[in-house]
Image (cartoon, rainbow over all chains, first blue to last red; front, side, top):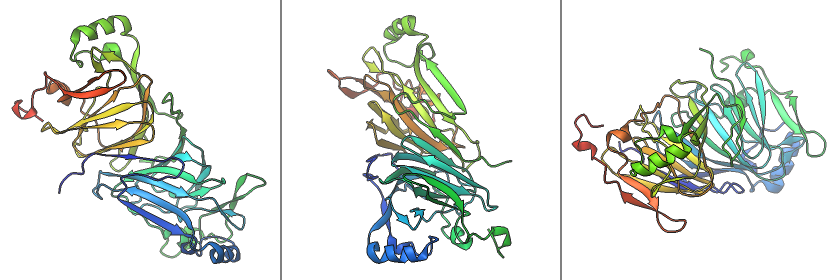
Length: 202
Length: 202
């Protein structure tokens, strides 16, 4: 197999647009059913904005080879579903011990992380803050601002993603919700089922 | 072994200062002997500025475990030795197929890359440009501007560095030198010895 060649790309920190990407994918509101606590609010939003992009990812994937790196940008547009701030589906790496870094380029966000045992961490993201998501941490970006949350990510090329781990537990243990004007807080998710209590749990 | 925990750091894009670093190392002019073509110019500079920092690296190293990630900032102060713009020593990864990414935070630079066979690439770096250094590419940052060149780097934690590969070939194949006011150009290095001609070459 030929080795990937060097490459140079340009990132727009406001829009997340990345030149030279090898892939872009988009998630629309209509793709996010079942993820938010307030299902009625979600249905109403999806009826009005179902075709709108909730977030998009520009990715540069030189290979899937162990030891290589995949990087790209994630752009999560602002929004709320009921009291919840909009978020990405979230994932754990299929190779569970693979970490990931996220450098905030613009916007105001929270990186919400949890372990399978329910331990939880929320790290605020502002421009120039970088979050290291340690091995085995489920993670999801939340936009708590009113502009796009743009992050640069990088992870080991053999990491893979498991996007279902969150749904299998009824969501993440905590929710990130509105707290007064311009604020956010972390509150328990009433639908969360501790994984130890789930047959065949993660 | 315990898994590294999540962490959040803040990067100053102008100075390269990174909170939460696990290590900082500095290279002074007096550490850079033998690297520049114009030895007399180097000696004169080192006599006057030997104690000054040429570049420094703030690093976050959660572990050296395969599959983990190391990241940090590199800050290369502006300077010239003769006609050559100042550069970092440069390296290839000890595990040769490990890549690296560099995101330019501020300044104006060139990422100079070459393969053991002498193939060469030079990618200009301006704020928000990101260079992917492919597997097996020797690489060095060059500051062609008049302000610090600050980059964020990330590489696989098991990559390691071989800093001698460049010296063993008499330097990199090409030099990055002054070209008029504010410009740079890439010219052949007269001291370069093709590696195929070196007994026990890389």
